[in-house]
Length: 249
Image (spheres, rainbow, N blue to C red):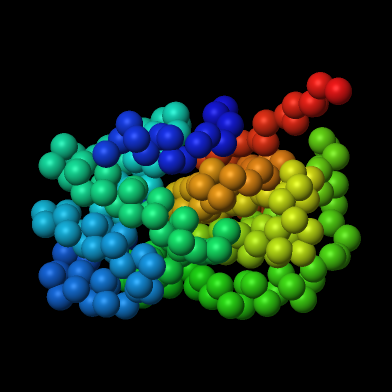
């Protein structure tokens, strides 16, 4: 599987779930979306709300699928040719938003909360944890005993990861308290039954590492029902930090 690649470098060469309702296609809805999001992600919301024949919810899926495909993963939600320029613009806007925010801040979760219909989220039991709460929980449990993965890394898992906010908050806390080298000692494992959520988590963890030049020991993101012992889960992302190169004495 591909390792974490340089997000910015990949953007140079490149200049999906059934929530779509008539509400997404309404121009008033798109306008309200842009006004509702924080200013740092407003350009991203603008790009995803200007799809004309494609509603914001579908544009968001185009965006997620495109980022994963740029990184070398299999196509997930093919982008129509007439939507590609705006999707490419959205990728650039996301890159800019990442560079302006503190590392591992939840960006896509905020945007998705505005995109998804309230009824649609309820059907899947989706109620995302706000960043402030996730950050507080990570700091309240700053140094608990964590299980060790088979490769010796300390493991942090979220069986219903949503946008990845709990994993992101943990990474943010480790970076703030212990510094960047500590991130290499951890395995982050997330799973969600929703393909959009699983991809949001994968993208947010990997893109933050690339843009902020950080390395997490291992990232494992899957799609599937965590409570099912028989169901085969789909691997969305498996990424490892590159081995450290010993400096010549």
